[in-house]
Length: 293
Image 1 (cartoon, rainbow, N blue to C red):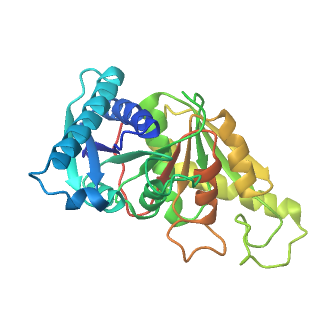
Image 2 (image 1 turned 180 degrees about the vertical axis):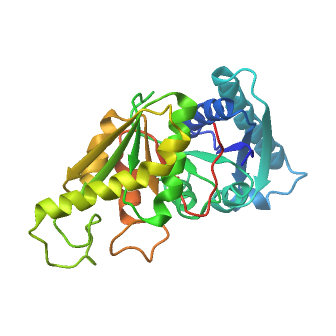
């Protein structure tokens, strides 16, 4: 898709940080940046002729102006559009993602959900967006390779494609991490997993190595310049991914994975990484497409 990179703006510092990231992503992809501010609740009911309404407009204009200033600092020659929409932010941004190539949001913003580790807007978009969602979180100015969580399932293929494309666009290495255990349900530990294990560890390890290698065959041929390091780790998936994020510039996960939570739109592993990773996280749903570098 050649749609713009869309970023949610609410005036909070996390959202302004996300604007800078979004601007750089738009520049490297060669697409426009779209700044979107959505407001609902009490502000919707302020009469347009009242003094309070004028104050709301001034506040919104100031918020978008500061966001544009941040964006132009990050990417001076970028094409930027600004939009103010009346409505709930989660729904407004979800609609915006239908024509975007990438959505970028801060991990927390200004809302009644501010006490949560992950903002409601970021969590909703990760589960429902029509394009990949990049949630800006973790340490400032993270550097390192793209860390791709590989589980070998068909629904995770778009995440693999996105990770390779992102690494190619940014000229970074890619670490393909596949976590396994001796449970017969190969990777994702959860309450729904079977309670028994297999003891033929050599055979199981060989099978997991095959899964990891096969998941990378197509993208490696498509992106031959991306340096790929394969990591096969026996352990707990969530803990391993979160720990590995300390050395990554971006973690890429699919929206759903193997395990007892497959009925949810956002898998338990993806949720854990979104809440606790030490760097930005990209969540890629199976229905979305990816721009070529």
